[in-house]
Length: 411
Ligand code: HEM
Image (cartoon, rainbow, N blue to C red; front, side, top):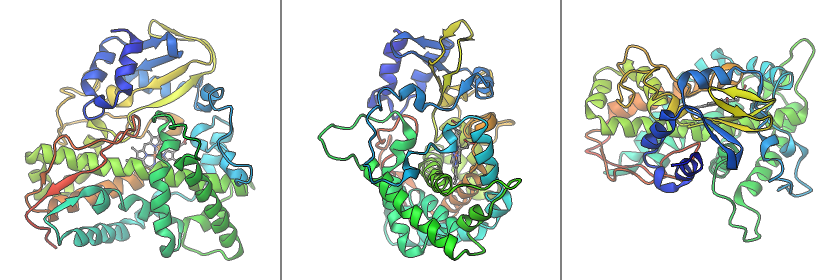
């Protein structure tokens, strides 16, 4: 099969439930150059790790797709922040500057403060699910927790949280980058209208906080953030808040859902977690390796490169298939086994190098608390359908529904 045909199989929704045999086919060939798409697909662990740190690769991936997106999808009256690239897709010096300003507010201390509120939210959600003998983990826990947590951290009024639930579900497209094209029926796609609505809302929220700052929310901290006299401009701040929401939502939803799915398929591991909730952090790390929420990331070659034997011309796209790399036997022995007890877990689930996930401590906290509470409280859980249905997304690959039958949810 040619590299082009392999990519075709990757894009095919039939591969979504279990893409891992396909990833192994890619890996067996080393880096695969797909001439028709001007794209290199990299699947080896060492290659991915090295390339994620390589300054010859740019994170400004929109440059590769620019020709396709010549038509600006946003209406003329959209707020200017909507057209500002977020720092996930910027290179130094802009990336360094923005990331530094945000890191000063998004600290481990700020995340540690969230431990008790997140534990309470997890318990409330499971309480609500306890009346029924079957529940869908997505609305029931995994799909609701991350957006509620980020709203509480940002200081979004609770009455408005439902708006964020609505938007975040529509905005995955902004991050996925590999979703099916719009159906071209002439109507504004939902992700475009959702993005504009979210930007309008956040613009107002920031203006409001500027008028009356608070002491205990992330927006006020971001407004106050300074680095040697440098501050975030209004549009930079809005675009960063939208990034925190979008980057932190679907990813964490998938972490919790993929973790629960792996545990239900490995009842011995579920029993071990129930017996010792202290192992939840190890279950999170193994889930990030075995079935990661972000399957791949991409960069654009700044100049001609040689990766293994593959030549990449300047401007070519480099896809780093993280989910394949983590099952590289050279990095993790017996990689197809889900084993939270393994001696060392090597993964790139949060990326690597300068763009390493800023929200990793928060995602780990939410994952740990959600998985431990699920194991402790849900009695005799079973999957109603295996495999469950998957959504179309290739990069933020995840289930669309995870129906679980059980014998009761205890307090
Ligand atoms: C399990 C959940 C999560 C996973 C698997 C994940 C994964 C990733 C990955 C792979 C990257 C690097 C992308 C690249 O190099 O191109 C990244 C970057 C980022 N993530 Fe996460 N993420 C998660 C949760 C979060 C949360 C909760 C937040 C914040 C609320 C967040 C905020 C960010 C930001 C701001 C970046 C950009 C960092 C930069 O460009 O310097 N993420 N994430």
